[in-house]
Length: 376
Image 1 (cartoon, rainbow, N blue to C red):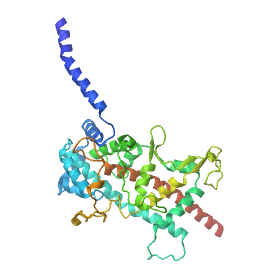
Image 2 (image 1 turned 60 degrees about the horizontal axis):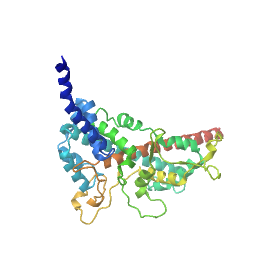
Image 3 (image 1 turned 180 degrees about the vertical axis):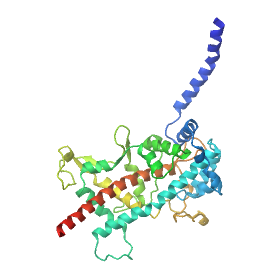
């Protein structure tokens, strides 16, 4: 009887030691890096899986994996080649890997179709405030919407209203992917959720900024080229607070009063201690204007040794050399999730832009009702 009890325990001792060593290795591995995203997505995919109908969309793509990756217009030539090589070395199953790239392409396609809506809104804002010389055939400079929207946010919205607009729970992003873009129960949905967590903890990775910087350093004025980078720098995450947010509101310590006023006079005493951060607001409005295109995600300028035959993408974007490729990943031949992080930040910017657009249109409707009441 004693041997029947002791022998199984003795057999488990080496296994326990092995598991202990494995667990120690997992703990030591840096979190939130691209390698972490790769492993966690694989683990979640195996645990939860995806439905059979969503698992094999790649069979309809004639170009295969390389055709999918080359179709991503926001990837520079060297970055795309690196992704192809990394994908071939990836531990992901082939159906999972190809399904991820298919949904990546599908998401960008649907997001590109929405760009005209943001441009139409910005043109509407400019038309509402510049009636002179209004001609339907004359192109409208949507940059003119920046000071108009800046005035609206600081004069017609309270700091409390702005603070409500510029926050987004992390759980809302997967819901947007599912309900708005109809991508759910797939391998990419798993990767998307994992990369959202990576974006929330991006400072831990020590990676450089993901966005492309084009403008001159220290230059003043409205620089839409650097709007993505500035937004990325301003973006913050508070796990126990509002989730994703930007510091649009500051504590008013110098007693100079808040910069915004409200027509309904319902500010409480606590709200009067807050003021709008003009710099952060201006940078967001520049990012908001960039949502109108012409490109979904900007690419760095083409260098002299790039192949001219590589510049035929649908966004008329230019290719880049290997000097500005993906951030360094842990280990070799690891796919980069830089492009996914840029898309997630773009979704956050659009979510907040939608909030500003809704408030502006409500204000315009109130003005129209007052005019109609006055004429009667």
